Length: 293
Ligand SMILES: C[S@@+](CC[C@H](N)C(=O)[O-])C[C@H]1O[C@@H](n2cnc3c(N)ncnc32)[C@H](O)[C@@H]1O
Image (cartoon, rainbow, N blue to C red; front, side, top):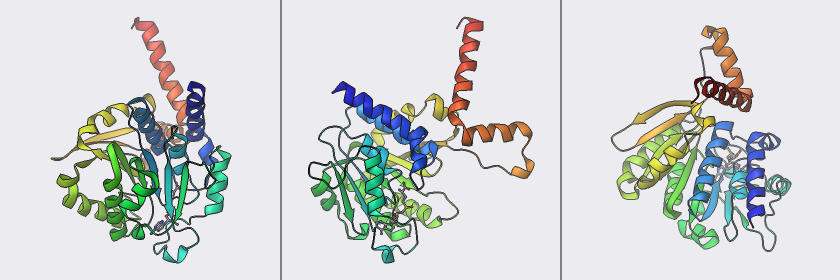
């Protein structure tokens, strides 16, 4: 049992560091790191439930959710797949067969008898919270990355908020992106209308996702994200009247104005983050040795 758990943790680490390169899609290293840290926290704090993703494409961000499943936990993904005529804003292009192959490359079987992964071909407009509860029960991690128009983003946020376990997390993709202003607008409108009723607040922002959870879990999740890796990418803490949120990001620079040091640091952060973390940790170890602390 313990061995199976350790094997799953090894696979998750391998996936975020290098494996995800072999899967087409959109999942930055910072968000992969945030996913794995939050999933590990849920694991060690007995926050149990299923994982769910709307908008799966080839499974790039769905695979780590499936790798985190424990015995008796289920995962579900919802995508249009072959019904791409309904993909009205052309975000990605789900392919069920490629998804199944990618899952299988990571030892995850979908669709077979006894499998704990459910693949649903539908527009999320035609899914209800009850449908999700019937298929996988309450959800501890819900990733939203399907249609990007305002009505569907609000629909998907309502679905997620309606099925979360206490301590459940929602990850909303493509927020604050110049290419998708509708996602930001939809989130703002949804949050204004539902925040006091749902009690769900943002607590972190990755390079392409906003992370939300019930208010009473927010400080614990913020705390758990302060790892060596993520603090290297920490940008700022935003304090609003309603919540506090930490941002983690690889900065985009005015490249024509960057000096040599900035270029080197950004190249390291973007292409070789593990090497940068190793340098940082070694430097700290040498400092401790020199100063006896
Ligand atoms: C940006 S991609 C998802 C990327 C994926 N999460 C990854 O890790 O790479 C968006 C996906 O949403 C699907 N999609 C678009 N509109 C949808 C809708 N109304 N309901 C469900 N899925 C939808 C598309 O088929 C596509 O696979």
